[in-house]
Length: 436
Image 1 (cartoon, one colour):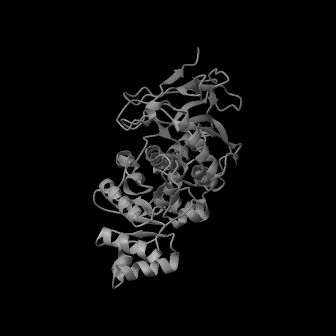
Image 2 (image 1 turned 45 degrees about the vertical axis):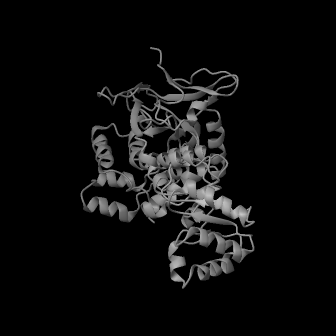
Image 3 (image 1 turned 90 degrees about the vertical axis):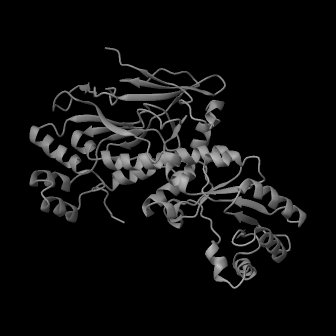
């Protein structure tokens, strides 16, 4: 793993800073914001994830000697810019939605304030983290919403790039998954890990009984046996027999999961294994989890759909300059700036946001103030918190805090948020334009 994140960026970030140094505008005070223009099609809410990883990336954004030599040798930067990059440290301020919070169209998820040069360079690495992590967390939230009290295990590592697999496990845990198969997620972020055996373990042995005996001898009666390598009913009977009815769980990984779950539950109860749980896997998504709610299933393992955002692998967040100083003077006024591009327009000015709640604590709107915080009452929640102050990271928190925040924020949503059918955002976004 690289010790610096400085090249997790696009070439043009450096060419812009170099050109701005030439025009004398590189160090003008600037405000960038990271936000979505819309939710992915059909989604009713989104989930913010990646904040902690982004803070680490900002802290590690350094141009060491080897990195600078590479940039200079390839004539990507000239000597003046290379000299400045050698001492690069982000010294500005960052405010943002805390991790686990929900977002809606135009939510100002990050507000980055500093010189143009300092803030411009962070665009790509921030977007790459937020777009992927939030896509996974948003999919995971829909899945755990459908699963209810039944635990979900993240099992997608073999379906995604290896570093992304770790990020996916982290994001899924924030949105309610109970554990992950990925050990690096456990080491790096403290995500609980779980895993027993695959079909290859059964096929390794001369018989299914031999495989079960070996697994039980190693992991104990509370383990989960994979029972669909050959004959499911025979495997369940053997697992119960070998444990004297104390088998922890069985896993189904193929076929009609709902129908099998009913049949296996009846069989387990008939055999006296009334406490043996049924875990199902096999390319599950939130729609299948919803369909399985009536089946006697005790837990789910989810992989491909989760780590690819369940059809929306990116949130299409953008990072745009929304205000800049009127001159190079340290006390120069900030001037709102905005794009007028067709279908890609932006709203100029520094943003603030709150979640408007009614008297019962149910979310009613995402309210965004331009230039000043929107007025709220005792029920409303301001959404932006300090993450970086004068270059110092101040927004780090335990992953458990993000997990708890997500559960609380999702509980505030109207009941329509539980619908899996495509629909509009469950609450409207109200943008209060700055008065002239």
